Image (cartoon, rainbow, N blue to C red; front, side):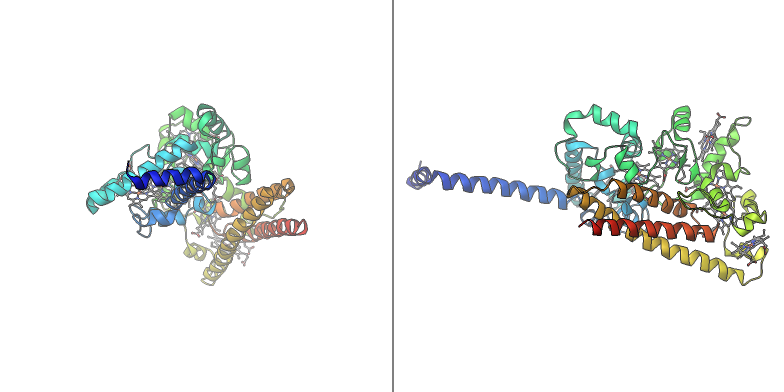
Length: 388
Ligand code: HEC
Ligand code: HEC
Ligand code: HEC
Ligand code: HEC
Ligand code: HEC
Ligand code: HEC
Ligand code: HEC
Ligand code: HEC
């Protein structure tokens, strides 16, 4: 051992307390830096470095996510692309290291080909049911009991149902049959036909698949099941519950409405959806002119334009209100009533949004529902402010 090292050790022994403190600060600092690095490299901005395209499909994963309902609700990349729990998180981070290595070693063509052909179980159904059901959440938590509670690195780690679901205004897809505005029994379909989530939710997040593709997929199987209760093309109202409800002026919580004028005058679904039999499900403003004069295109544009901008506005307010509620929870204020009001508002908001027509199906009722959503959000804010 050289003289310098001996001197150094002797010095350390003389200043034991100082050395201990410095060492502890060093270790804590290193740990802190590491955790910051873990967080930073989990951000969509980081993924964007290598997945930078705009639109949908391969390379555009960050942009497509940004425009999704999941992003709106704060569900981020590793909430889907990393299994729940500490080990799930760490495994996803190791996958990230592999990504980085591959980025440096494979050709752009090879990368594109990997991204264009994601494995069928890249995001397994178990991941989805963790958030979207009570039973799946409980089962996963039980199976991975020891790795679930340690640290909270992302939203996923805090998902406990039914609380999470309810606060996000979501149904339990396995026990409820009115989901996303559609009358649809997940439990029956998944169990009877052994289906995975992505068999129907193809295109979720990253691909622009048309809704017509999805509807055709349902009808194909239903046509093969003649004599069963499976609804066929002409039974629009059996599947399209939200649109049906909106026409009748019902369905929203605490908001009474009237049937739309046209529904009252017995214009049925196929009165406007004239191309349905030919597979052309989606009408446009031009359809109005089948029965009205050309000015009515303007009415259509007014209805859709107004509702669309209100939905966009409420989307922002929704995130703000949710943040406020979470902050209030952290400060241990009583928020139970406010959360209940928030759940109701979200339910109503989603009813109009999921109708998918920006209120064209019943502009008056849609507008009343959105008024009530705005009022509920205002009241929650007011309540939280007053309690300061
Ligand atoms: C340094 C560049 C780089 C960064 C940063 C990066 N990726 Fe990737 N990613 C790649 C490459 C290259 C591939 C294709 C090769 C592979 O599968 O590793 C890929 C593939 C993927 C795949 C598909 C894997 C498969 O098996 O099909 C997913 C999912 C993914 N990345 C998610 C992410 C997420 C989430 C982030 C941010 C937390 C991220 N990536 C950040 C370069 C990167
Ligand atoms: C709600 C869950 C969910 C979220 C959130 C999510 N993804 Fe995905 N991702 C999927 C699913 C499901 C697939 C499987 C392929 C498909 O359906 O497109 C996938 C596929 C991918 C792939 C493989 C290539 C491809 O285009 O299919 C990449 C890369 C990827 N995601 C990156 C990201 C990044 C980056 C983010 C965050 C900005 C993100 N994902 C957020 C569910 C999600
Ligand atoms: C971390 C929890 C979480 C995970 C994991 C997750 N989701 Fe979601 N999902 C949500 C939340 C929250 C919403 C509500 C979005 C909103 O308010 O519009 C949502 C919305 C949806 C919707 C409604 C339509 C939409 O896009 O807004 C569908 C369909 C859906 N999820 C399917 C899936 C599938 C399939 C998977 C697995 C690939 C999955 N989710 C994974 C939390 C999650
Ligand atoms: C047989 C087709 C099919 C399968 C399989 C399927 N879904 Fe769905 N799912 C639907 C339809 C139809 C809707 C309602 C239409 C819509 O809003 O997209 C829906 C709606 C949803 C919603 C939206 C609920 C809401 O209130 O916004 C979620 C979340 C969801 N599904 C999750 C899942 C998950 C998780 C799986 C896998 C366990 C799954 N689905 C499997 C067809 C299916
Ligand atoms: C693999 C075949 C298959 C697919 C795919 C399928 N269904 Fe079905 N569905 C059936 C069968 C069979 C029945 C009749 C069950 C009975 O008579 O007990 C049915 C019944 C229904 C019913 C009426 C029963 C009820 O729940 O009240 C609805 C609504 C329905 N399906 C909606 C859908 C939608 C929406 C999709 C597409 C997202 C879809 N189905 C996809 C086979 C399928
Ligand atoms: C078996 C159930 C079922 C029946 C019956 C049905 N639909 Fe659909 N329809 C769906 C599903 C599922 C979707 C996709 C919803 C989604 O992805 O959000 C859809 C989507 C649509 C779309 C959007 C198409 C697009 O590409 O934008 C229109 C419009 C539509 N349906 C109209 C109708 C009309 C009109 C009828 C009656 C003539 C009808 N549907 C009957 C299940 C059904
Ligand atoms: C007054 C005319 C009119 C009537 C009546 C009507 N629709 Fe529509 N519907 C439209 C128009 C127009 C669109 C397309 C709006 C757009 O693209 O912005 C549409 C869109 C839809 C969509 C697609 C929503 C989405 O998610 O993209 C569905 C589903 C639908 N209608 C179902 C129905 C059902 C079910 C009925 C009967 C209960 C019905 N419609 C009655 C005019 C009508
Ligand atoms: C199948 C024929 C038909 C189609 C298509 C149709 N309407 Fe109507 N509309 C009617 C009938 C019938 C009434 C009720 C007559 C009345 O009370 O004046 C009506 C009433 C109305 C009214 C209220 C009364 C008035 O005349 O100002 C408005 C507004 C309206 N429609 C707008 C639209 C718009 C916008 C579209 C396109 C999305 C559309 N309609 C498509 C048949 C139709």
